[in-house]
Length: 111
Image (cartoon, one colour):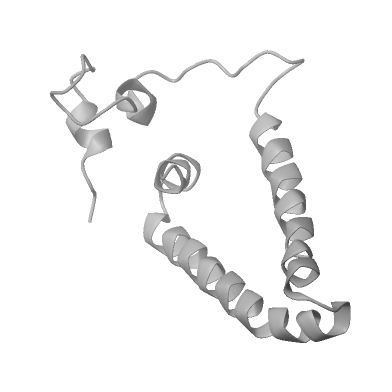
């Protein structure tokens, strides 16, 4: 899962808080889905249309995520790598791939 890496890079001073916000958002989404799908089933005449309505928020989230991810680019060029960090060892655990010396710092859990 890439969200912990995004949280660590985007909010280095608030990792715990932002991970909590992310987890709460997951729980809220699951709660809304389970609470609202049965009434949608009745209103739309079946479970397939009811579940299909959840594609709209998913597409919206994809658009927002794509726009946010491109926010760091200038004129279509990717951002300059900052060196090291989670990008240098995203291929595996420390010792399983040739990484920089700070791989243990970025790949090991901080809690």
